Image (cartoon, rainbow, N blue to C red; front, top):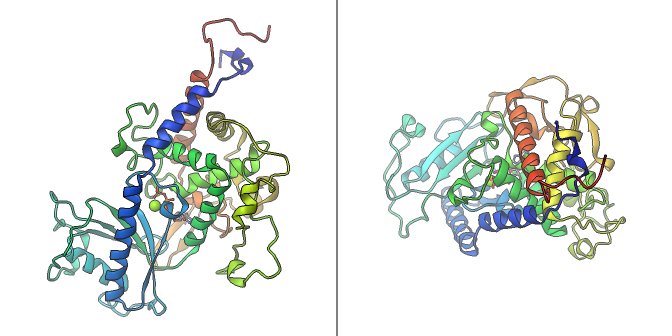
Amino acid sequence: GSRGHRNFWPLDYDVMTDYAKSIVEGVSPTAEEIGMKDKMLRRISTICDELVPGSRIIPFGSLVSGFATKGADMDVIFAHDTVDPQPSSLESNIPVRLASEFLKRGFEVDLLIKTRVPILKLKTPTKETPSRPGSPLTEHSLQGEAVVEEEPWPENVSCDIGFKAHLGITNSHFFRTYSHCDPRFREMVLFIKVSLISSSSSSSSANGRQQWSKNRDLNSPYFGTLSSYGYVLMVAHFLINIVQPPVLPNLQLIPPPADTPVSELTQDGYNIWYFKDLSKIKSGDLLPNGKNEMSLGQLIHEFFQYYTTNFNFVSECVTIRTPGGVMYKQQKGWTSARERVGEMNNTYQDRYLLALEDPFEISHNVGRTCGGGGVRRIRGEMHRAAAIIRKISTPLLNEPAPVGS
Ligand code: 3AT
Ligand code: MG
């Protein structure tokens, strides 16, 4: 802009760092909440096992990765050895049966089938609003005898159940390992989640000091922006491949020991190897150029600056595993949108306006949910965030610039 001198100011990130830390602390779930969710998982697991003996509930997502904010949803996979991929009727369809069961228990229930794999969205009953009669499933006359619970459920907790074991479980543990490498990774993810993207999970935490957070609505893959996971990839890419010296080592580039079991090497045909030895990771030996000593505030600022000025959204692809971390859409053939047919014969769009390569399923663009408007809004908010940080980090704003002439 017109204030060309601003780049010569040495920025002081103390205020920003303190601010970011207070936000992170404010949105982190308490030990009590984590315990409550563990217990809920066990109860849901028991219900599923009663309905489909031998089935398992496997958690993943932010509860596993450690990137959960207060009130975050729970993500689980329903796993069973003999799930019929082509159910012969609505009644034999496991997602539908589970939906019906939780409806009877007073949950709010929604079954999404337009997604790549079906997702059953559950929300525990609240005292004020018992299960809504207008819930989509009642149209298929799935309600039955209400089940009386021996113990009330914690109110207003959401749980998404997926029906196909997928790399989400692996990638959640992958990022959990990464967050053990350096606490700034989790802090950045949480700060960016609440400051920039979150419209649901942070609004309840009502932190009056948030300056740019109110319902920015940039975290809605269903409505043309990005999933939380997408933002995690953007932060990881920045900390592994961009900032110098890197904050995080590239765990995928460290060769596996010869005796590594195949289950740690490949899954669904994808290379899922990453280095998992926490004691080595924590020793710092994996960072040949020494430890990055930047403050949290500076890293957040540089993150926003990178994505608003250096990263080329049109031609480049965010990648974690690639040495050097630079990849072009052209190299991946990610150039024009195409339609695909999903598991339930539904079609969905693959778009490449924002290209985020999944660390394992490298043919999958995690940013495919982003439309043109979504990308513009995300970039706009990042711009705004960078400008705010620059402002609050510029000391002695009213004095003449110390450098330049
Ligand atoms: P929230 O706390 O829910 O905001 P999260 O990390 O749990 O953050 P999501 O609920 O959006 O994120 O997704 C749950 C997990 O599913 C996270 C990741 O392991 C996996 N996942 C989500 N989106 C994708 C994707 N597009 N590709 C691959 N894995 C994904
Ligand atoms: Mg989640």
